[in-house]
Image (tube, rainbow, N blue to C red):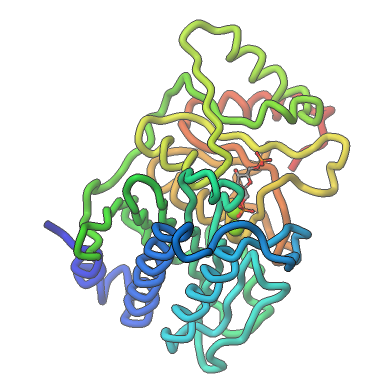
Length: 320
Ligand SMILES: O=P(O)(O)OC[C@H]1O[C@](O)(COP(=O)(O)O)[C@@H](O)[C@@H]1O
Ligand SMILES: [Mg+2]
Ligand SMILES: [Mg+2]
């Protein structure tokens, strides 16, 4: 049995320095606390919405705010964390002026699913950044990334440079490794997209989805929590698509680069999958702002390659 802490210890001094071990341990502890709060949310009144609106213009749920506070506490407990960047914060927050890293997170992903008891998650990414100017780096600069998925089980999924490991929270609050070196199947016949947005898709996405629907054996899934859709893809392959809205190309898409697309892209590539925004790999996009949105297509390598080739051929389509 390998616990999360034992896994970190085993890589301390090689893939991880002591500061990174502390940061990742504190993130694991934060996800335990969030998991606890979620399990009893209806009993403790942590349901519904608040009056607060975040920088994205979205109404915050009490659990968005609480999860953000728990993740900020993980930053405060980690002396090497200089900055916190979050979906729920307008700008970066200085935590420890002498720190060398930024912790970037979506404290609760899929929070529209909270009141219907469907899997939600916490997504995180660690980069080197001792000044605010260093935060806007491409996704290849990530030192570690991961997510917690709060569903029937709580899973913690982590990449630190040697593949992807999956841990499961046991009844004593211990994360135990349940999948070593998770790999995403290279081929798939399962895709995930919000089909209600079809009128806003470009021709490449429309043709891909229409072609898939007409092909025997293809299946469609859409949870509405990217973490849950990602977790399914880690377990049985698949492709996830959240393309840009063709009527608003400047908006970039729905998902945010720094704390949604980049960490998921890092995990997916580490597991042998691919993650693109169109012609460009997600991890190669140079960020221009903290809450920048990008089109996101990721999952089984060969299926993603079909779409990336279609974008390269369709030269008339303006895409990233
Ligand atoms: O409601 P839509 O358009 O299907 O969007 C769903 C997507 O939005 C998200 O919920 C965005 O995350 P947040 O809940 O953190 O804002 C993704 O998890 C999910 O894939
Ligand atoms: Mg999210
Ligand atoms: Mg969120």
